[in-house]
Image (tube, rainbow, N blue to C red):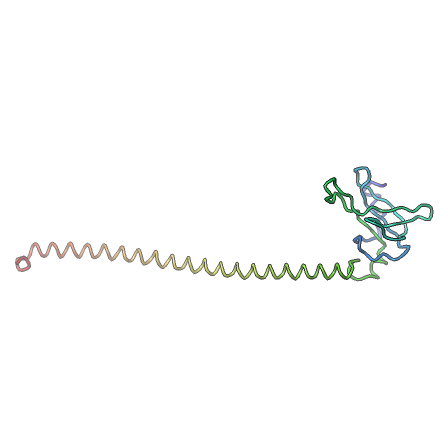
Length: 175
């Protein structure tokens, strides 16, 4: 198991990462980054022979072994997912990055659903923004009208004072 990043980079020249549901052809070379004894490490792997329960079966013509795909915590949550790498030329033979058709369809459906949610939220956001702008405009109108009313009240008070003074000072208005 290799842990030196520079050595790992050299080993992965000409290789691309794929998901575990990739349709692996028989004898395709697979290299992988996995978890062993609590440490991450890179393994040169071997040639693909088949799929097992949570594993890929590989061989190097001397030995055959499973590559454990998911490492679990005691509560059954995934602790670590093994990363798989294959030669680029094999990857270019399959379109879609190694995703199976059901997986692609599920991802497309998820993307469409999320896009619909985004569009709905955008519409609601725009509506709320318009309502806020309307509310601010109405508040401004009300504020200005309140100022106008206050000004008119002051004017009426002044006029009432003038009328009061005039009525007290003019003899004809007294009778």
